[in-house]
Image (cartoon, one colour):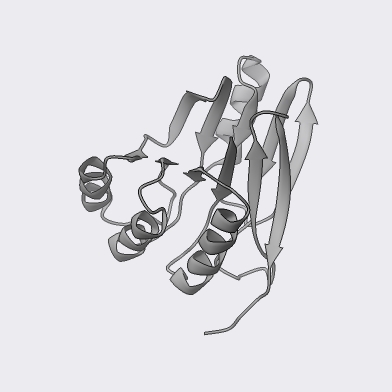
Length: 169
């Protein structure tokens, strides 16, 4: 399974749309969002763009009105908004999801996950820590000038980072 992984939208739904269309073209059948949609309107757009495919999400430090976001996720048959740190098993991989790098590294040190995924820093990163992949897909906001997302292939247990053309509004 290919899982599209992204973070830090900060209401830039135009960048989100571009990323989601590309992830779908690249064969993603599942999505992981690592926080900072910002508003319920952006979260609603994310749910629409996921087209009913599975979506696992965690909140970030700039997500407002989490109650509304939880209600939207609960109303969706395929979306789940987890607490700020979630450890889930998908496609025979144990994944740690968080917006914060400190939680990701905490899970790496525990040594019981295959991948620790996080956002927050807006900087794309992927490295191996022992047998654990630790990765940040970058951002879709555009603050750093590099828009990006990752695609985790659960069959090969590898992740590729992808960039998008930077477009101003």
